[in-house]
Amino acid sequence: MINLLGNAIKSTKADGVQLRIRMQEQTVDKPMLRFYVIDTGLGMTEDQLVLLFKPFMQADTSLRRKHGGTGLGLAISNRLAAMLGRTIDVRSEPGQGSTFSLLIETGPLEGVPMIENPNETTIGEQESHVIVAQPRQSSKDAFFSPRTVSTTSG
Image (cartoon, rainbow, N blue to C red; front, top):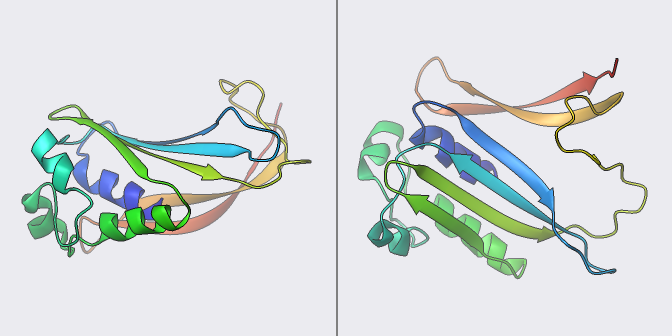
């Protein structure tokens, strides 16, 4: 997920990047979460999508010049997903951005609080761990910093 978010931040100049997480319909013994990384960046053509997960390839070589990188991040991410028996799905249109998604089995969720109404702005009093992306002062790459935040309803 970190690699997908980092790539989305690099390719998006405005409007930001979204990480959405949704519970998929589940069987009794296999709860699943689908993670979506949505950007409003450059988008990709069908020809670029074909090469996307190949080692040492990048959809937009100008990003390599601007941000560095070897073109291995998505290949490694996709291989890790395959080790979990999954694939990373991609939808993209040139000039419209891209959506990467990954379905992951969570294991048992008994006792885990769930948000019943995803439009709620507060989720009660609890502590959450988030990753905050901030631009580095020395480059245009994003710096990921784990943070703990508390939310309080009322």
